[in-house]
Length: 108
Image 1 (cartoon, helix red, strand yellow):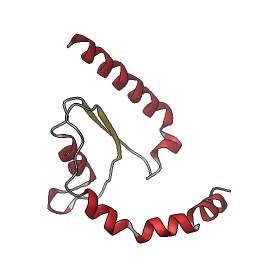
Image 2 (image 1 turned 60 degrees about the vertical axis):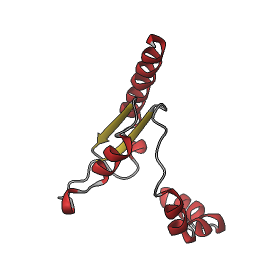
Image 3 (image 1 turned 90 degrees about the vertical axis):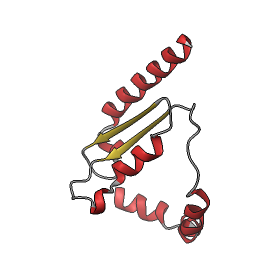
């Protein structure tokens, strides 16, 4: 069922047009960063392969979050669609992050 839904939803005109624009969209955002005062939480999949040159999805996200005052990078074991299997754990992380962000902003 998942395969059928993915094929139906994943290969429509809008998705194909989006894929054609991928390089242009990456180039538009390469120098962008998160505002330093905006709380940011990122979930990432743990990759078991040894990264080349010490670079990985984790080091990329760490770099993206380095200037953000309220940030959290959560690395979870699983496949690309973490939300399919880790939704309970992710929900707890989100709720704790929101509580922490709200409480820290109240103290200021």
